[in-house]
Image (cartoon, rainbow, N blue to C red; front, side):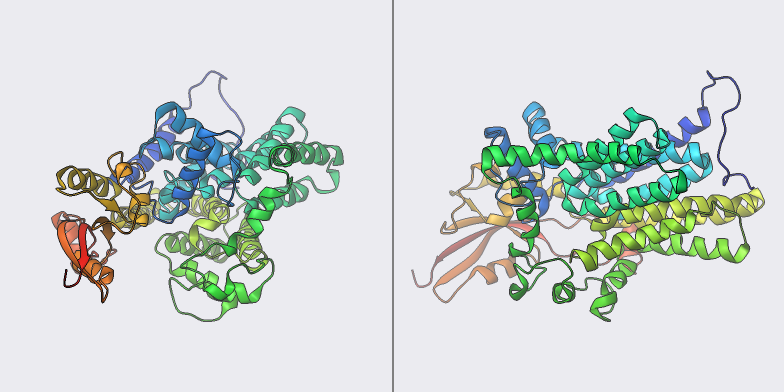
Length: 515
């Protein structure tokens, strides 16, 4: 079998330092750091999930028995570490992203080490490069979110299970505990955890040990039992967390029409059809979710390359492990459970476990294909592919809102304001980590309001005016980026970038008409 597709065996002295593997791991880590440094936009606030988790962490810091009122607040695997980190180091754009960043490194380290052991270094490197060059993966790496934390626990569970070979009891228990913790991040962990169990059962075949399955299952149930006991004792409802999760559609959302709020999410075609098609054509509710993913700039290239690599492997009859196609089945099953079974909004971030499976499959396939080609030919294919991924991810990362610029603008405008200011609700949530903004009043009746204007200050003032109230712009700070010449050239020609929105931070003065 070709190099890059066979199971690796150890050779040489035990103390030999794997310098090549260390160099590969450092390259992946450095690439991720470069993408994050390009635009560190972890916390965005407004009405998003990250503000909900920060708000819940603040409540938990003030009262460890703080009763959760939303499904965000009930996710202890996110809220707990976020509360602990911010209690120790304070709130900042860096600290609120640390739990997610730790989960990101857990994912990359586990995938890299597992694939290097099972398949080879070449496939491990390609897989991790595809992960860190998938825009949605980078986007979730430093944002307070359930997506990366859920992925971290499930990948670690799978890695420990493979290391245990299904028989080593301590590692089995550790794997089960990690699977249980994944549920603490989000109920959608049901899908990847089910895939772990299915993969284990297929790999074990007729020789599977039911005692091992039972030990793993009991370990996975421990975090869930502890959570239910806690809520039962202190909040009067052992199933509080699950009640909140199932009622998540009742929360007002701009993505879901009012008539569908509160709809039961499980196997509900009407709810599935109600989610908006953000990218690509509106074809039919049964396929719009897939269309949305294949047209989304944050994941489309990864999907196309993964599927394309499998087609090429089949056409060229390149030998790969027999279970490689099952990774595609697993990714599609994960999508089906979430979209059709649980009625989840089909945004790319919800499918990180499936995306990770596709990256693993692509890593195996591309390594096998390149092993069949002369070095120069393989390089002539892989280098442009790498550069394409790099350009796509860098452009998406660069185009994201510059939250640091917003933070600096708010500090300067608040300090220089000549009149008492209030803040718009969403604006104050976007500036939740800005000490100066937290001193502003929350009332909507103030005469001068600091507000984020996605379409510019003039348009914002017009939207805030009424027949009885005049609104005028007192001061504004444009938030459009000063593009370098190459980026400006690309943006002008719509190469990977679109024209910038005229976003600005404004102080709007309101006064009675005729007063």
